[in-house]
Image 1 (cartoon, rainbow, N blue to C red):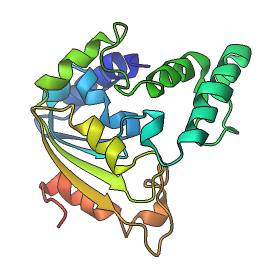
Image 2 (cartoon, rainbow, N blue to C red; image 1 turned 120 degrees about the vertical axis):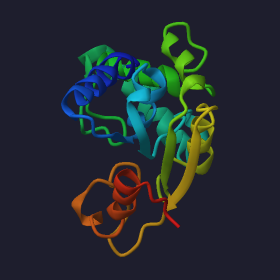
Image 3 (cartoon, rainbow, N blue to C red; image 1 turned 90 degrees about the vertical axis):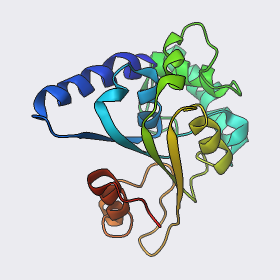
Length: 203
């Protein structure tokens, strides 16, 4: 799973650089998408970066520890081994190839997540990242608790991280997965757009 950051994210960032014709590059990553810059050597290509629900996935740090444990350590692992994938029908842990599920389950079982693992050497890049980050945490995200989000973002030790809580309102729940649904276009997207395009931080 760490290859997504070390290789895929890096390749995509360099492709953007080749296409951007001298204009600045900004990034927006959801969950793992906010972890990827720390696993990549391509982070210096970005001017700034916003994250949504980027967190340390350790199961005890969530608001649903028993549910998370069962979905990942029991059902997720079993489906990955027996079927080679985890179907979308497993809420909160579905839609993954088996190998990805196994990696993720291994990380979630550890308080340090993927840090300190010999098979994830790219974590050595985290202390090098000096990007400005806007870390957005939906208040109703049972996975992205204050503890889970802040524990992860502190790994960007040299970065300037600004935290902001997104409160669900009339447009309905945000949770872990709903920020990018069009129903939130007017209520929540503008603050991210202003940050990315105008370097304006939310009040």
